[in-house]
Structure formats: structure tokens, C-alpha cells
Image (cartoon, rainbow, N blue to C red; front, top):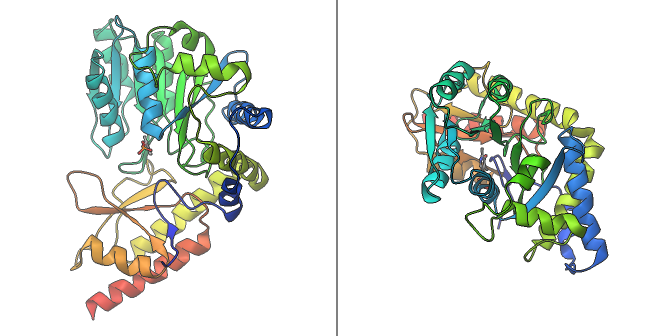
Length: 365
Ligand SMILES: *Cc1c(COP(=O)(O)O)cnc(C)c1O
């Protein structure tokens, strides 16, 4: 099979050195292994700019959705009510989670192209004092829009509610001051901007609120408190841990630091994204999201006006030449998406642009 690089929002292209870490079958009871888990948890807190006094990191088996579901179904109790802020499929997935677990909720639906408004959140909190928790997505991977968590966070804090943020496709790729923003539960996963492989999600949690959730979880395996309580003793996971993924993740964290930390990685992603939009615009492909709200992680494009090809034709043409792209996910328009995260550099974006140019030329005959 021909190798290709992933221009998708995760899993994404990782380094060979990260992949090589997985050639070792580690014992889960072993102290060395437990210490790796503990070190990862410390490093995550440091990336989130929080200390062990107020916060803790919990690793949870499964993909990112398992982490979001673990938080929502563990911390919103029977008397609680969740306000979901949604401007894309991942916000709507939180609604599905609430419905499945029979959690009382309200939803603030926003246009996929608009950043949710803190003023609307404030009005909803004022109108419904039963609301105890607010959940929102930071980088909505559906469109690529980067939501303004800071303005919503300050409203949530003023009303003394608990804030849950799905920062799946942004954590590690842009600096997030978790403590300063008063985020109580932030969820991300191994296979996004930290550039590890799939297998677990992680939660940066306000320790007091986590402890307060003891006994409230609706699920056994996704019980956030129990997961933490076991893991916090000595780094042993509650049930079988994805050992290979954990080793790869530890290496990926080392490589993030070697690159110069989140600041440097963020610059690289931004540069990838800047070149992508500039080159694609010149070929007649407009981004779906306004430039001031566009995040650096993934970009949704409209097809060129005179396009006479399908996504599948374009996908296969590009894949044969070394890159895999992503179909669109917004509901009301024909679009496709290009991710600019992972082990991807401006040179890759330049190559992709040339392949796309060639494809469009051939289609026009
Ligand atoms: C990737 C992602 C998730 C998790 O999706 P999984 O398919 O479970 O990995 C959740 N929210 C956002 C914003 C994401 O980008």
C-alpha cells in the first residue's frame, strides 16, 4: 500500500519515533509503566497551566467521545441541569449524550458559521436558575471555527456554574489557561494536537468538583471519579489500559517540548493554515468560516464554482500523490475539509496545493 500523510482532524500523522515506542509490550502492573502514567498526568497539568493543588488529570480509555461522555454522565447529578452550547456536530453530540443518560438539559443552538454569544448564555442562565453546568466546544471540528471560550467562561463564573469544555482538537495546539478561565472539566484526546495515536482521552479536572461527583456516575466504566481514585494512588489504571498508546503519548509529549512547547506548535499550525487558505483561495476555493473566526486546525472549503468532480475523485487523486483529505460535515453546503495538524509542515501544504492545482487543470482539460 502507498503511504500517505493525513490532512485530517485526527487521528493524524505522527512521527516515526512516536510509532516506534509501540514496539514494546509493557506490563501494566510494572512500576516503570505506572510512573509513565503519573508523569503524563503531571505534564498535562503543566500544559494546562494549573497546579496539583486545584486540578488533577484523569486518563480514560477510548476515543475522545468516551471522555466527553465520562464527564457529562459523571458530574451532572440527578438534580442538575446542563446547558449545551452547540454550533456544530460535536456540540450536538453532547446533546445525544445527555439524551442517552436521561440528563436534564437545555440547548443553545447557534449557526455553524457563528461563534456562540456569551450574552445569550448569560440570558439563558438568568432565565433558568435550574441550570448547574454549561458545556461547550472550543474548536468545532465540524467547520473549523474557533469558539470564544473566554467570554462564555467569564459569564459561567459570574453565575457560579460548572464549566465543561470539549477542547479535543485544540488542546496542545493553542495555549489554554485552564485555571485563569475557570474551566472545571476540559477534555481532549491522545490523537489530536499532542500528536499521539488513538486509544485514550484525558480530562483536566477541578479536583474539588471531581471529588464532589463521587457516587453520581451513571456508568461503571466511564465513572470519572472511580477512574481518578484508582489512578491517583500510584498510576495503575482501573481496567486494562491502552499500553502502546500510553508509551506513544509519553514520547509525543517529549517531542512537543522539543519543538518548543505549545507556542511553537501553534505557530506551525497557524503557518500551515495561512498558506493553505492563501493557496486555495487563489484556486477559487473559499473558506466556509470568516477569517476572524477560523481556527488553525481544520478548514472547510466550498468547491470551486465551476467544479465538475466528486469528492471521491478529488480524494483519490490526492491520495495517490501522498495525502488524505476529509469530506465536509456542515449540513447546508457542499464542502470538503483540510486538516493542518499533526506532523505536517508548510512544505506539505505547498505540495498539496500543487497537487490540487494539477487536479483542477486536468479536470478543465
Ligand atoms: C475528535 C473530536 C471529538 C472526539 O471524537 P472521537 O471520534 O470520539 O475521537 C470530540 N470533539 C471534537 C471537537 C473533536 O474534534
